[in-house]
Amino acid sequence: MRIFFTKLVLSLLCLVLLTGSALAGEVNLSIAASLKEVIDELSDNFARQSADIKFLKNYGASGALAKQIENGAPADIFISANWEWMEYLQSRRLMSVLNIGTFAYNTLVFVGTADKKVSGLQDLPKLEKIAIGSPKSVPAGEYAMEALKKGGMEKQLETKLVMAKDVRECLMYAERGEVDGAFVYMTDALQAKQVKILFEVPKNLYPRVTYPMGLTTAGSKNKEAEAFYGYLKGGEAKAALAKYGFALK
Image (tube, rainbow, N blue to C red; front, side, top):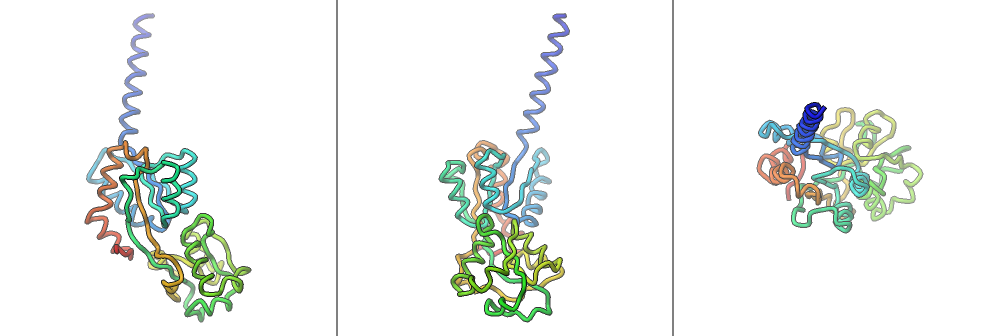
């Protein structure tokens, strides 16, 4: 009986050690949806250089991701599409204040099919349905609403707006023909197959699209997360961002 008990304890100890080893190599990423392709590429590149690392990726609206982190969802690195949601987590002491910086910049555009005679905000009332990210959680939608307000178009378009859960859903609605056009980022538009950029939203109508990134308080204790965070600030990351159409300064 004593021998059986000893073997059981040893087996459980080995299981715990193996489990701890597996978890030690995991990096949880919470990333704005518009960064999916570039982060997929960079995480794959980094994983090839570090065989023991495993990335668990969560893409979505910045506000939704921030709320998930606040509610205990595992996250080592958070990249938002605006400063608001990064500051939201900072104010709750969920970010490592020594490890926050700007990852990249973007531009807001309006996309639709080539047959749409739209060349600026003033033409949008001609359309029936326009996709926009929900401004309460989607920075692209917040930027777009700011532009509509400053451009004097908010009231004319309020019944035409179709809310989406993130910027990629906006693009999907436009590509499927479920709406006549959509507000998305330049980098999303460059990935599109069925729609094209009809116009760039004037930059004086909304704050610059900025992607802050940082280690969470949990991530600051994860050496693999720290290593990947450093990699995201390096030359390979900058080259990949430029390839996908992001601005670096």
